[in-house]
Image (cartoon, rainbow, N blue to C red; front, top):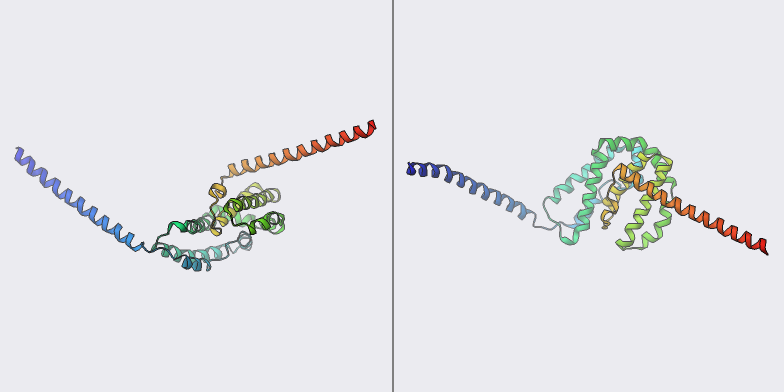
Length: 250
């Protein structure tokens, strides 16, 4: 009985083990071939040349395109150049020093997903485009406050807070001139465009916030601004009262 059991066990176990080894070997060879294909480092000049073929990645241009009901064509043009870029990236790998380029390409993909594949975002942006176009056209102070310093600074430490200040300034204006929903669209689009165009590591500075978090952030900023204005008014009144009392005594 024991002999029969061992024979049956061998008949079952050995073919199974053989299949397992064969499958592992095939998997190993397939993975190895894929790795060998990607041993070549990605050419940054070639990537830059491919990026130059993309449609204009600019907030004002995108909003204006949406206002003209031409966003569908814009998305088609974007996909036409994004597909060959993705195909090329499958054949190479990035060097560690090219981390910012890799991050930018991730930003371009995220922008395409948000702008072209998210139907709700697509429709809401088209609906609010006219109002948002007025915001980016007339609100020149947002750029004027930071343009000189931003253009002369090459430090990520200095550049990131200034870009954040520009985004917040436009977002506040969108809340006042349009609506909170429109401001959320604008904030999300602006952050996506920055990540897709600026090769700088700003950490969580440009993470897209949910609607509730954005509203909370805006309300806190408004509260701080209001408190600062109120404190200045109280200080001015106290100073005026002190001067009035001093002149009365004299």
